[in-house]
Length: 268
Image (cartoon, rainbow, N blue to C red; front, side, top):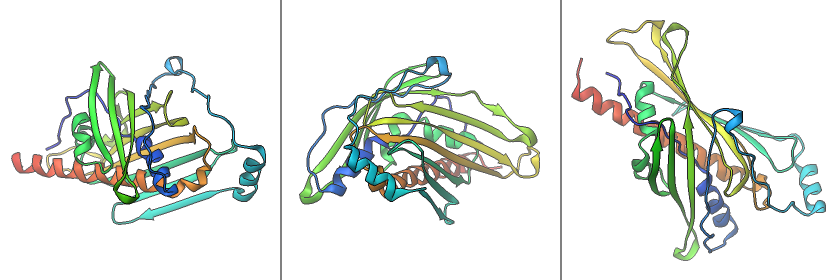
């Protein structure tokens, strides 16, 4: 029996941990000041313009980076989870487009319930030490999140942010499939550009709904990003990919756990 989510919507983001990961890579042991991250997306008319107050890299260094990277493209797969990730270098300097997906052996509602368990996210997402629901209304939620990264010599690096989230309506697709999406856009935070969407799409084997049907759900994540502080994004790619994989696999495992518990409570 499928789990039905009563909460409005939710969003789980790696950005709070990416800057911390960069500090860990460079050996830094400092904390950044409080960073407010506000993600707001639905229709273009409601999207604020991204803040672009960060300084550009030195021309000679930036030019060197462009020459070294060329047409950058990276793909990775992990068949254990049905996980795939693709990273593309975009024409604009120091910007990347990341696409990732993971297979979830649970219906859409179990995955959605996991994404919208705001104050429970920190319980199963490594590196997310706090997630509080600050405000909630129809198709809107504001979260306060704290990401944490271990550094050398016992130090910890913290990044804090406030995130606004918007969700789309449930879409009914041919052959009994269903899809639901969450769009996001960072307007103030650790990235000059950080926008994209989550997509949860459920397929039904055989195309017909029945009591003993089998579900296959795909959780997808697409983000276009550019660091605000000038750091060559190619140096962060490995960390970014690892963080995104950790997020998707963690959501997958939690959703499957929720569904197993639901099945035990309501055996066919």
